[in-house]
Amino acid sequence: MVVSVQAARGALAEIVGSAHVVSEPAALEGLAVDGATPRWAARPGSVEEMSRLLALASSERWSVVPRGSGSCLDLGAPPARVDLLLDCRRLDAIVEHTPADMVASVGAGLSLAALGAALGRHRQRFPVDPVGGASRSVGGVLATGASGPLRFRYGQARDLLLGVRFVQADGSITWGGSKVVKSVTGYDVPKLLAGSLGTLGVIAEATLRLHPMPPASGSWLLSFRTPGAAAAFVGAMLDSTLQPERLVVANAGALRAAARPAAPAAVAVSVGSIAEAVRSQGSELVRMGREHGAMVSDVPEDVWLELGAALAGPVRLKLSGEPARLCHWLAEVERLAGEASVPVSALGDAGSGVLWLSLGRAAADGGWLAGAVGTLREALSGEGGNLVVERAPRSLKDHLDVWGPIQADSLAIMKRIKREFDPTGILNSGRFVGGA
Image (cartoon, rainbow, N blue to C red; front, side, top):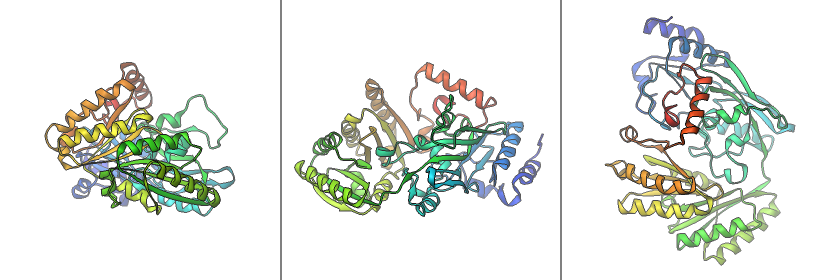
C-alpha cells in the first residue's frame, strides 16, 4: 500500500512515466473539477496503463475522476474530493477503421476534429455535433451523453456506439458490445456506459457506426416576427416530406449571441444529400417559410458553430419535454427570466423536445435560479419531462439537485448497477444522479 505523497507519485510514474504525472500544486489547481483540486493527475498512454492506474487507485481507495477534453468537468454534482484525475487525452489513436463496413474503433481521447479529418478522407463521418464543438473527445461525448443538432436525423452519440473497451474500477479491462453492426448482445453495455458520466467504468476505446458524408449540403435561417409563427412553421416542417439533418429553434438571445440579424424567434435548418436534392428541398423550405411569414436567408455552415457558442453562459440548463411543446417551454422560460431581467439564449431541437438554455450572470445571483428550476420541474412532471442544471457556479450547485428528482425504483436499479460495476465507489463518486 502506498503510504506517502512521494511514494504515490513514484507509483504513478512507474506506470505512465514521470512526464505524464502532474503533482505540482499550481498545475493541479488548473485541473480542478468543479472546485475540487486533484491530488495527482496521470495521463495513461494505453489501455493497459489505464488498467494499472485504476488497480492502484482501487487498492488505495482513491477517488478517481476521468477527463477527456475537460469541457464538461462542471457537469453533475461537485465531487467531494478528487484524488486522481485520469486524463485520457493520450488515448487518441484510430485503432481500426474499416471503410467498407462504415465502422471505426478509436481511442477515447481522440477529438471529434481529428476523427472528422481522418474519416473525411474516405467521405465518411461520425455525425455528432455537441455543444462544445469539435475539440471535445469521443470518450467525453459518450460518457456525458452529449448530442447536438445532428441528433434530429442521426440520433445521439449513444445510438451510434456499437461497442466499448472500458476499464472497471478494479482495473479489469472489459469489452461490451460489438465491432460489427449486425451483432447483438443480450446485455447492452455500451448504452449502459453512455451517459453514465464515467461512474461505471472508464471508456478507453469506442467502436462507432459511421455514415457517408453527403455530397452536398445547405443551411438556412428563417426569422419570424413571433415565436408562435416559428412554432407553426416547425409543425409544418415535421408534417412535410422534407428530410432535414438539423431543425433547431433559436430565440432572440441566441440570435444576438451568434451575431445574427435580430428577430423574436428563428428556425435554423440544414439539408445534406446529393446536390439536386439539396436544391429541391431548399426551394421547398423557402416556399414553406415564406408562407409562414418568415424572412429566409442562406447561411454558411459556420452558423451551427455560432449558434452553439450562444450556450457559453455561466448557467446552462437542459430541459426535456414533449417535442410538440418545445416552443411552449421556451416561452415559459423566457417569461420567468424576463420577470427577473435574466438574459436567456435558447436553442431547441425540434425533433427531440430538448431545449438548451444559457442564462446570463444575473441567474447566478440570489435564489432566483433555484426557484425557476423548481417551477419548471414541477410543470414538466405532468408530461414526464425533466430539467438538468448542466452548468452553474459551485456556490449554487451546492444548494441544488442538479439532476432533479428520480423515481425510487429507478434509483434503486441505478445504485445496484453502480455497486456491481464499482463496489468501492471510487469512480466519479457522488457526481451522478441520486449521488451515484
